[in-house]
Figure 1 (tube, one colour):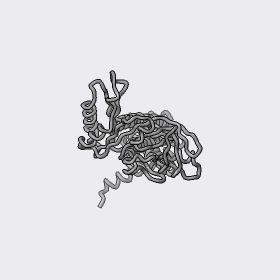
Figure 2: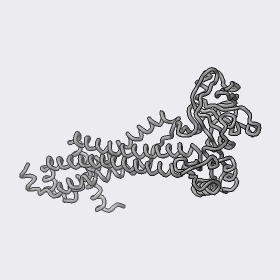
Figure 3: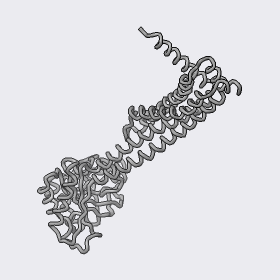
Figure 4: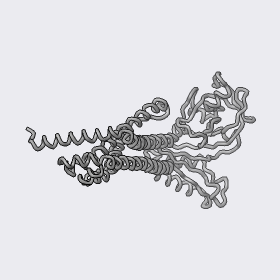
Amino acid sequence: MLSNEYRRQLRQSREILRLAADGLFANRVEASLAAGGLMIGCASLVLVITIASVGRSYALHSIEGVGANLAYATLDRGASESYTPQDEITLSDLDIVRDSVVPIARAAGTYDIFVEFGLNGAHRHGALVAVTEQFEDIRRLTIVSGRYFDAEDYKTRAKVCLVTDFSAKAACRRDSCLGKTLSIEQFTCTVVGTFQEGVPTFGQSEIQKDTVLIAFPLLREVNGENYLQVLYAQARTRGEVPWMADEIHRILRSRHSPAARYRVDHLGIVLGAAENISRAMTASLVVFALLTMTIAGVGIANVMLANVAERQHEIGVRKAVGATVKAIRFQFLAEALIISLIGAGAGVTVACSAILVVSHWLRPYVALSIPLTTAVLSCVACIIIGTVSGYDPARRASMVQPVDALRAD
């Protein structure tokens, strides 16, 4: 059974809330504008955190898609005081690295040059990339049609090649390029497959829009070279990549002249930079959204102060008939809280609706989801800012003297 005192307090609270709602309805235009400011701030906070989270996930996924747990070594020609052909990375270096560095799951090498090639009567400019075995797995290539190189192609130096799906469509239109002859000056080979990158690097790697892949043993027949420009190594786990990179660097330094300098980079560096940039951008955008909320809170304070000034008579009458300072303060705090709740609810609704609409269009590229935790935290922040903004007006209202209020009226 509820005590009489508890029932009395409950009735009093309901009465105060009713009075707060009536007060806001009487000043609905000003209250709506204040709630609208909080709505914008709350919606901005939800959208900002969602966009930053999705952008971070997409960027990290794209970087990792270039090759998981990957490190790559090159001869740093700019830093080397004087290097000789013996300092170039060779197939022997690749074999030593593959066999002696325990964390390595796969290793491959490439040599790329820009060439003009002819295919199906069309002449195109692009990259000729000679690759060793396991390059397909390391770089996560997707075979669109035909096949990739097999062990026999490497062993017999078969004159076969693959072209990007972009080149195939541009040169052969609706026809298939499989089985057609591709020519590079005096060198010719047969197209056995078309491919594309698993995750596009937009020309920032050896794979360009127009790219021809050949097995590395054929390289000498094209330009007489027989060394690797890039040595790729893939670790079994991401945590082993830094140690693997150090070991590769040590091996290359030990097998070549002291004057030669080698760069061994890994995607962990790029991932770390991307995460730092993402955190900085997220923090900046969150501060901006919170600033928007704070400005909206100032709007609530202005609305409440105007209410206190306009309702001096009401406050005086209520105090004259026995309303306590606590009750008056609670009434005006309740008004600020109602404005905050309306603004928070509307802001989350707008943000979630926008996410649902945009996710329909972006579904093929990136997955968007409604962040429940972010929505709740945004509501809490909105309510706190609104309530804090309404405290001083509520305090001023509770301090109004009945005699002064009635005389002023």
